[in-house]
Length: 257
Image (cartoon, rainbow, N blue to C red; front, side, top):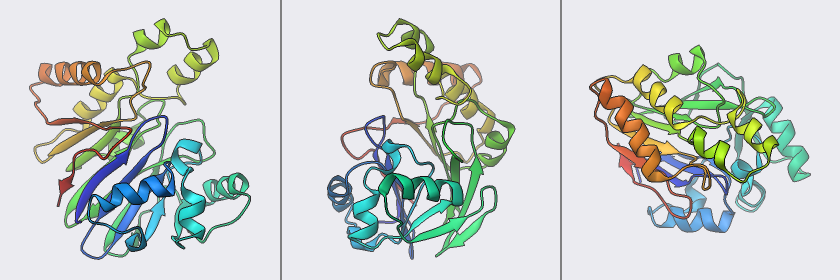
């Protein structure tokens, strides 16, 4: 399948499929290899066809399926050196890595992949823009706040996958412990609905075709709230965009190239 499809999004696991004419990759593999295989199959993609897994950071909800995918299926892992070290420590083994340098674009197959630094409580977390078929895709979640680098890198994306993790009032009202609330709301935590909307406004342009709202908190957000907050803010600036909520338990909407 040539296109883009989130396979899972949220605190229980994150994985995205992106395929071009010559190259098929996953971005993160935070669901089990079995689940990943099944969800790819619904797209007509075999797990054996995956050329690599690009990893944003080492947290469990982004690497849960890596061990089986790397060792059973021999899929190489694309990561920066600090994230690779953290993955090896977590897996107690060392997969086949292809190492990139954060903030330096590289070619993989017929894809141009640009990893850029973000603020999150991981060793060296990144987001990605990936260009295929003249389509630029931005994948940016697990960020505490929007830096100038983030805003710059996400310019001119045709497809945008961005975090709308929480509604701040819901976090304060939740039963979560104070340490959780402090982490989520910190500058190395997660992006709120309002901050997500502001980011989309900052990078909006005429050729932005599709926006995915990703990594929603199951307790501190709802799909309805996320769409309402983001769409209302954008409409104040005269912007109307298709907004897709990414699902945790099933594939989300496919965008074909």
